[in-house]
Amino acid sequence: MNTQQDYLSYKENTKYGYASGRLRVMETRLLNRNAIMRLLEADSAHETMRMISEGDYANAFSGITQAIDFDTGLKLELERVYKLIDELSLDPELTGIFRAKWDFHNLKVLLKASYLAESKLSFDEALSSLGSIPIETLRLAVDPNEEKKEGILPDYIQSALEDARIQYASTQNPQMIDIIIDYHSHSFMFEQASKYKNKFLCGYFEAVADLNNIRNFIRLKMLNGNIRLLDVVLLPFGSIEKKVFLQHFDDSVESLGSVLNNTSYGELVIEAIRRWSDENSLSTFERLADNYLVNYL
Image (cartoon, rainbow, N blue to C red; front, side, top):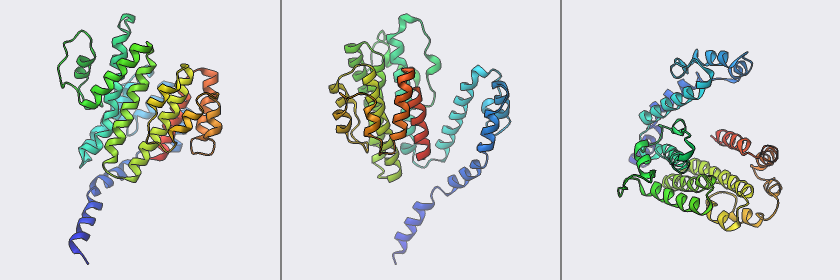
């Protein structure tokens, strides 16, 4: 019997004992099915907000009086959750992976804003404070009128910015900014997660890759894109091989539903494509994709 090895194994398995206990207590305060049904049956948005503010979300929604500001309450609650994760985490680099997606999100928002400056639209409300890179640093890096400073951004963000600019310059289509930066975002997060050789974590980002590839297949069909670009933006670490998407790119977009029918994404894809045909929007896909990832967790 190797006492030292057994002790180290025990220590590894219990190092998050405090965090686990604290989260178990918090789970009891989550909205259950009955509470959610009451929210859905509320007479008005104002009544829904009142009910939410009386529960464990009181701090986030206490100052929200108008239904139109509901998203502000959600942002405040997310900030609270991320702060809690930072407090409980014993591995900031690992939990920092999930903050990185907000850095890429802010990059997308600011880059689009720089190209659409003449529209006088404000994009500030779309920015998130949940990233690890200060928004003003990103703004400085993106602004074409500012003198650039070497090393102002991490290499993985700088690379995403440069690639997105190249693709936008050749297409003049803002959706290309989404496609390219999403590619860099998911690639970076999967690469970081892979360092931990954790089956659950890698499985999560594998699902993220699959959903991103499905999204880009549909997007490029909508944009009348070409197969060369699809080949470039398909993530290589999903469970669905790249060749599946490439082989069917010249078929109708509906064919993807049949191709993936026997996978865990089959119903999701069929419903998303059906709604896309009606709405010319990926909003249904985004909702279904979010639900898929939540169910994975």
